[in-house]
Length: 66
Image (cartoon, rainbow, N blue to C red):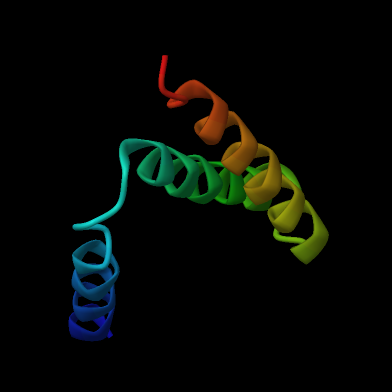
């Protein structure tokens, strides 16, 4: 299980090599927001999706080029 998780994580990170800073910020915000939605919403799918959406928007706006 740990090996599969580590390989999945490495594969996901390798896909971020050619992303812009704003794309990385959007993805990071979505992951953090999804995690927060999952925890605060008690593990519900709608809460997780809503958290990911809000986090993605926040991450996108925070890393917007000036």
